[in-house]
Image (tube, rainbow, N blue to C red; front, side, top):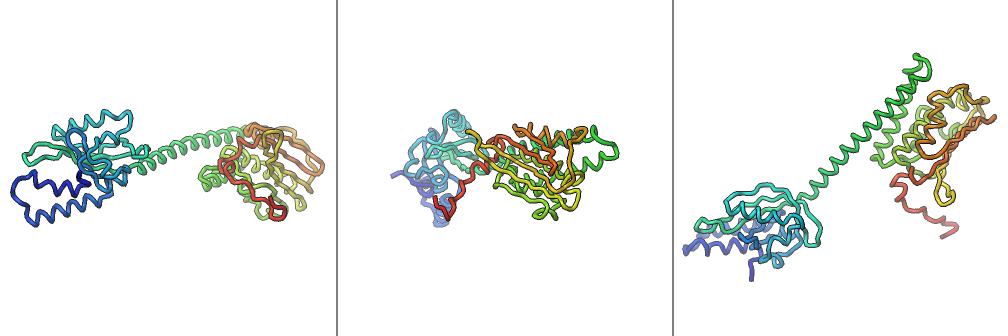
Length: 365
């Protein structure tokens, strides 16, 4: 029967050494070495100069999926995926020259077919006469490490991309704020808008950039008047999670609407109210997101004489950014701002993958 593992290979070695029987100390050392090899988490494998496996430890079984009975006597090429067939002849050529291969990172194939990232260290094995008779190989599975490295690289690229986008938005805010209004008003307005942008960023970072829940988004932009939430400012909407770009556009709109309501609208006095609602509704074959900001009980409102940057955000930029449209109604009872846009492009993957709501217990399925 073929040698199952490194222990069997080590115990067979004295036959190559000569007629002298090993001492008990040598036996103990060999047994210890065999135990170390067999208990290693790494794959420790030996092969001859033709690439035929001669020993296969438990670590190799765990990493590659093949048992020792399946691999001993078989070519090591069973583990090498398509496109990397030239690696083994090159490695064996180096071994024949007495060279060692250290920490060589490559791919190898598991028994079930999936690929593994592997770090190899390969050393020549010499017989009793000093000639090279094969190679010993230590293979370490570094698949998890490679996945983490790739995740870090992807995260770095994403952070770089988002940082550039954010800086572009900040630049646009500065330019447009400076172009509308007095220089004295510039610092105050740009500070407010940057704080609104920062509130959006905090919310998105907390959600790992997967999106923002609409209620949280509104509360973040109305944090400076949180004492009014639930009394003069009421929220009503479905649990909707929107994408980061949609959250950024909606967040800026809510900020500008709240600013106008405090300066000129329903929240400028003591009796006015604001109701903010959002719904996803079926319109034809495509769902539609409707967001409504409705003011009441405040002073009479009239369309502004000129469109400042805030008005431009509220009326035009938000709708365009979300692929929809905005209707502004300056009603006697108060301002009404309504956005309608196709819902599918605005919904986060988190929202799209969410399970459907359970049927109402009272009505049943």
